[in-house]
Image (cartoon, rainbow, N blue to C red):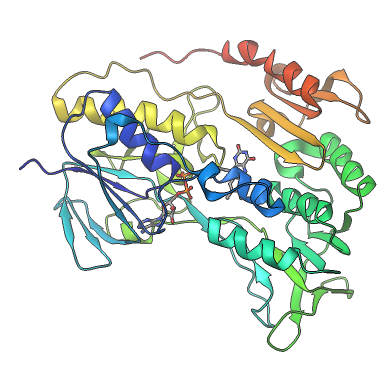
Length: 402
Ligand SMILES: Cc1cc2nc3c(=O)[nH]c(=O)nc-3n(C[C@H](O)[C@H](O)[C@H](O)COP(=O)(O)OP(=O)(O)OC[C@H]3O[C@@H](n4cnc5c(N)ncnc54)[C@H](O)[C@@H]3O)c2cc1C
């Protein structure tokens, strides 16, 4: 029997990879191995609708395409090791799977704070189980919430906790502004004001040194000497790639899995990486390998990498130009949305308001060497629509050649 293509990680990127392998013409067996007990589901609602109690698991679950109805699903099972020379992976339940092709789709897990103090009352948001546990904690009357980390997820959780009626919500971050890394000072300043106007407090330019309490957290000690009273702490301080199972294969795993410009791993054409875990050079920009944790990336990477892998396994020529996706993200917070196209973080040195004003709906452009490299809208639907109108212009960036 033909060995399968094994997909390690059965979430969005794993599912999309399986579907795209079929679309690219792979009609052999596919086995997906995932350590969560659930079929693939959508993560963005976890910090928004799920916390707010407005989404059930059924509404989050992806509906796999009919083309993968014959795939084998090994859920609740961890891939513990890979031997890329022998082309086998070992599973936590003792099974060993030989593969013809391997898809690395194991994503990220939340980074945790290593401060002294109790573990009780401290949460992260990555999985459905995380979000359900946090919702239960946030809906207790009079709850005081400290969100550590003012990035995407921290800002979204702060907004949802405020809407749920928490007595106090404070975001702590060593940086001077929320989401300043992806947005730059101008827009991050506008974001800060909007959160403050809606009741979120901020302790910026300071870090966490310890958690107070016995079994459960009662307070958060800050490096500026203050102690914030807290019943619930949400740690949203970045993520760590799930790559330990690939150790010992001579790969660059310093930040996710390094790939070439076609998402192949370690010079092995039968191994590809997709989704959050892939660190790939984007031919649209400067070719520097980066990981991109946006919802659009699992689908974009799966489309490209599945064609490359299928062509290799079937002896065909994929005939593809290097991977050059246009990144896009959105983030819903309170009653407004951030909507981005392109790579704003590459143009933070030259930021211009393209439309509207910073206290209302606004569209901001990010430039590098006088070229527009990204846009971000902040506001309502019309701002997002204005951002989308720049998509075509951003796609006109120098096209990579095959
Ligand atoms: C709370 C939250 C909110 C978000 N909101 C937005 C948003 O508003 N907009 C936006 O653009 N993006 C958002 N994102 C990002 C987007 O959801 C991710 O980019 C996307 O889910 C990545 O999918 P993935 O399949 O690559 O990784 P993951 O979804 O992390 O999937 C990896 C899977 O592999 C499993 N796994 C890990 N190690 C192993 C192993 N050794 N063996 C077997 N299985 C393993 C994991 O448990 C997981 O199920 C959000 C993400 C989160 C967590």
